[in-house]
Image: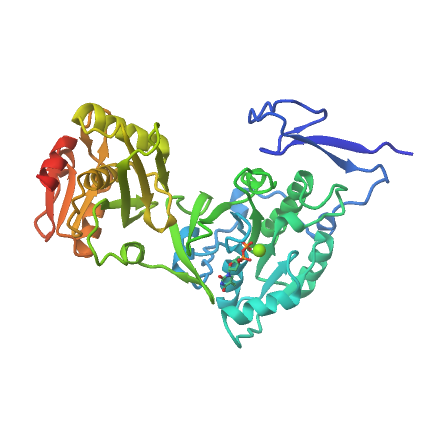
Length: 457
Ligand code: TYD
Ligand code: MG
């Protein structure tokens, strides 16, 4: 009897080895290797059905005709933008995200909206009845003729159905449920995921049908998938958000057909995802009363500017060690800001608890938010509210100097458009700025102490 063959894979990056290793030589992760049976030694299963059905031959560049294939619109401009202007024929896109974030909802909504393209939506996770219920919830009574639903997990079976249906767009929910009979390991294992993705990649490239793959990912990376597939697919989208808020953000991590700086914002509602075309409006809503400890920053996410509210609470520490906590912002950066305030400006925050919260459950990396965080902390410490028509955009250095930020014109324009009357920014940002047509008043500052004088003295 033939011997069964197994290989070891790194759960983190997919590195393959013939023996177990304690540390992955590729990504440096410890104890990440798992064993997977690749071949039980039951003999050749025969070549992939694709090899048999698809005729292909090497071509010279001049033999390949240049055709401008129009992109397929998804029905949602937020989604189109992230893809770089719509779906490209023959592209393979991976949509990753935590379970329950709304990946199936987004793609089902998309296929329900696309008209005059034959679509095959394959689910290995939900039953036909569940999908029907979801579709009814999203678009009641909408039964397009061009959409076919299939619940199947075997890739060989799926390709048989594809031959019959001849789809022009394919959605697979999810790559972790698929199983190819060419590999013996279980569905969801690294070797299966790689093999199944490779089969669909081959299909997309040879048939010019765009393919969407859904892949689950968890915070600790315990589910295999997206990381391993990143180099196989053309586009990697990450769907993220906070379970407790309705906002969902699609970010582009890799895109062979567009820029990765685009970002789409949606809101999860009872009847599906709604596009949020003007994020500032919802992020700022509910600000009728003036409270101390609140400041607004003009931040940049991808290519978009939005106004976002920062709340800070400074109170006397009840216990010996003061607490510092930040939601939506890096706690180490908060500690750094507090240390600068303490050392350079002599604000006594050492015996205070400091809590910082970014509204809307959004995580902000843009350093331009620093100035607003400092202003919110100072406002709470002084217990004086900042005028709600004031906003901030600036980075703070270790000496308390206010540094310029990128795309200041875009930030100013957004603040101006939303009716803000004052904006604090670094004095270095004012150089070369055309401020003639602006209603908003720009207040340049160079040191953090000046903020305090302007606002509270
Ligand atoms: P789902 O698309 O199943 O997530 P994923 O495929 O990423 O695992 O959606 C998950 C959540 O979205 C689910 O908990 C319920 C919620 N939801 C709504 O709030 N409104 C809706 O219209 C739908 C379809 C789902
Ligand atoms: Mg799902």
